[in-house]
Length: 398
Ligand code: HEC
Image (cartoon, rainbow, N blue to C red; front, side, top):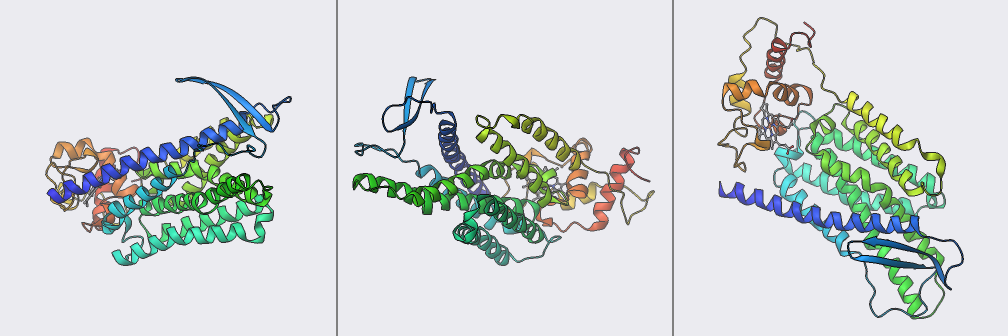
């Protein structure tokens, strides 16, 4: 009991920190990106200034200037933006451990996808997250770097491969979060290993009054551009974890691919809309594309395969055996102190009221019982399917 409570609070507090630092990191990064895109660069500008910008905010009027290269003398105090990235990563990894690795059987493993042992699952998970940084970094240093487009497509190709691979070894939910974690790790790796060192080099060059090496800032800029395009897909992955119609879909990796392409197109639109005026169609097209994904992932009524109509369709014993260890006002499953997502299935009325959700989770997305921890059989899933069919005769094939 108390262990479950502590686990819940560890989850809640680390998640809260992860969320706060993530907002601070991505918020600052969006803000600087916005500044770059909105600077008034028209001449005349002050000597050594590339552009400037006026803004009004809660604090009053602000006037910012961007230097062409840098000030001739370093200011006494210079603000860096790095800790929010590092803390987001550290809290994210802690969350992965708290939720997925300490409870691998529950959230990471799905025996119907692959019957891994927790140790195997955690090793694959860790290698896919950390290894992705090395693959990505190697690609960025390879001759591919000469063409930003080719490099971008190769990185995207690697991520699709990773998504497909993870969907073949983990539960849908576990696969999604690990693609997000791998991309997040690439982003933080970029900050830690490339962007901050290149900023330090700029600062050193100014302090030592020597010319800046353009290669240093080009490399930093390339990595920041990647981070910029990664942002929206990564944020989608983080929230999608509570929406089984995406990760629970049969083609979950492809759903993620389509959503990510839409997200990247939207990001691109916002990046260039001041310069490229002909892209007005991107937002409406993205909206239509999201509608098609909604349609694609819509719950489908599947005809049951093994049990036949007319057999007894009482699912209460099944629910009692396979669900209520967790979905009960008083769960008995270790680590649970209250029914997950507030869904208790103790009484026949509760089962009736939640018929669609039960059907959806056990037959369509098959995300429940989570990790099939309670060993639900195919016959039982078919029974639920028939039970549901009997309640919605129009929606099912006989
Ligand atoms: C081992 C514990 C456990 C068992 C057993 C279990 N669930 Fe769940 N269930 C969860 C958890 C945890 C969540 C919350 C997942 C999240 O955070 O999105 C959940 C969420 C749900 C949801 C809402 C989200 C979704 O996936 O649609 C439904 C519906 C659901 N369960 C139905 C069932 C049914 C029906 C059964 C029995 C066949 C069952 N669960 C068995 C732990 C369990």
